[in-house]
Length: 72
Image 1: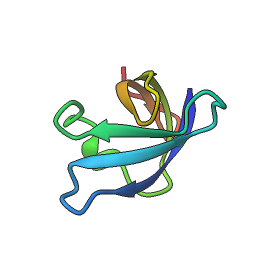
Image 2 (image 1 turned 135 degrees about the horizontal axis):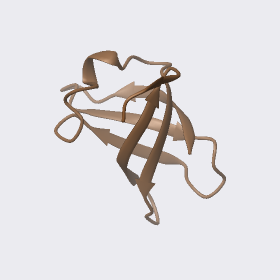
Image 3 (image 1 turned 45 degrees about the vertical axis):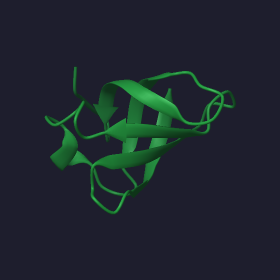
Image 4 (image 1 turned 90 degrees about the vertical axis):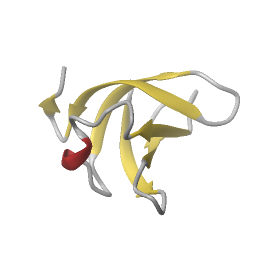
């Protein structure tokens, strides 16, 4: 799915991504899982990703692109 990074937590360890999918709203991207791309991220970054479904917040499992650049 595609989404936009909308904010980071205070410790800069989690990034929150709003998805364009009607089946998913807020998605969490954790720095501990994606340290190799963390420096590429900023508010407004466009992401293509997969997430583990959940009733409330979904957790990102794969980041395929950041701002159009393939990461995998």
